[in-house]
Image 1: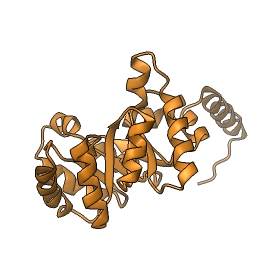
Image 2: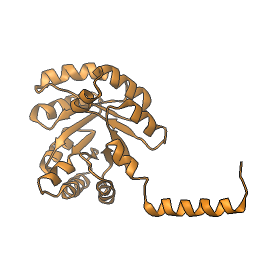
Image 3: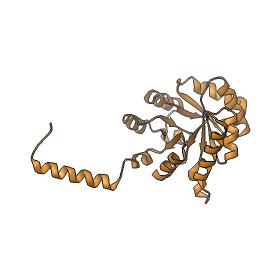
Image 4: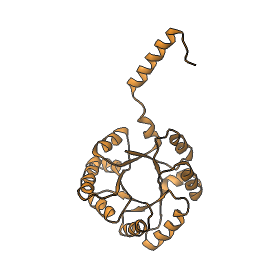
Length: 217
């Protein structure tokens, strides 16, 4: 599974990229607004930090306007992925862009039927929002299972990019199902490292080593 980080915080992205485990970045208008910085300036810094796909979302609602915004966004860097909403105009834009060789992330997916349409439109990534499903007492993981089965049935190349991740088990469950990517807030990604038995074992090893009076350095 690929790990993308869902943030526009350049410092956090640099820290995670230094681990060598980060495969890409997703942003959206809300995250950019939270940064308080210029949109294009933030995107350029992120693209220079991460080699993998960096999703930048259009804000227009009509196809022609989406295409104009996409043209500007594509000029930022070669690893920009244009992010479009799962609407008729968004899918029309997706088809036009992917036909032209541009990576596209179709976002705000909440049903398997929508995911099927995105794959038909040639989406590079489909972003089902599992946490928001859970918020309204629906099973977000069942949605991932359904999309995985449909895509496998027809050998669609579209990658399932699990979004709206709320806790580490969302990531584990998505990996068990066979999702291609999880995009995760930095704090959730950091939680993957932690296990109390790892901490306990490390403390015991260090205590035993200290008793020997030896050093490696």
